Image (cartoon, rainbow, N blue to C red; front, side):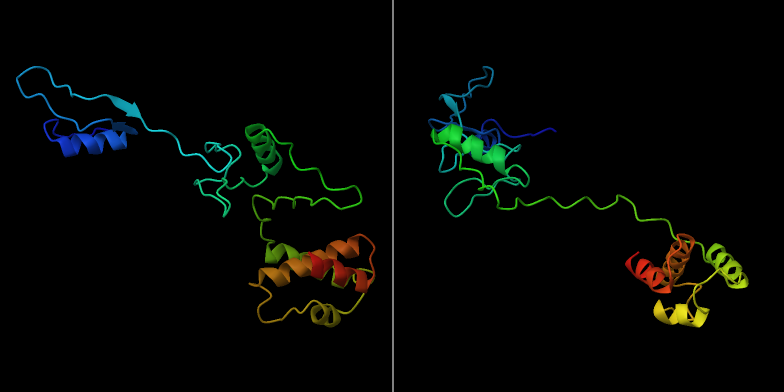
Length: 191
C-alpha cells in the first residue's frame, strides 16, 4: 500500500500521524529551506484503548470487532468465557467466579452440523429397489398405498421430490433391518 501526501501541508501531516497511530505533541511545522524534510515536534505513540478492568482488547478472548458491555468491559468471545474470566481475575487481582455447584447441569455445546449435506438419492436406483421388494412376497410389511400414505408421498412428484425419495429409501433401509411397518415409518420420517 502506498500513501502519498504533501509534507509541506501541516493538516496532511497530522492526518498521516493519526493513520499511523501517533499523535504530535505540538503542531507539525515543515522545514522549507531546501534541507531534507523532517518535522519539528516530538511524536508519541497513541495509547491503546482499555476497558473498565484496565485490559486492552485481545482477539483470543474478546469478541471481534471490539465492542464493550454496558459495564464498560470488553465482550467475551464465544467459547472463551473461562479464559475471559481468568484474564479479568489476573487484571483485577480478584479470584475468578466460582464454578456452578455440583448437581447443576452444565450446558453442553451442540454437535457441529455435517460440513456437506448427504448426496441426493437417485430416483431410478430407489425405484428399482422398491419394485424388487414389491415383487418379493416377504419384501414389504405393507401394501405400497399404505406406505405412500404413511410417508406422505404423492405419486405425481415422486420422481423429483427428494424428500419423498429419501423417505422411501429410509423406509426400505428399516425393512432391511427387520422393522415392522410402524417402525419403518418412524425411521423414514425421522431421517
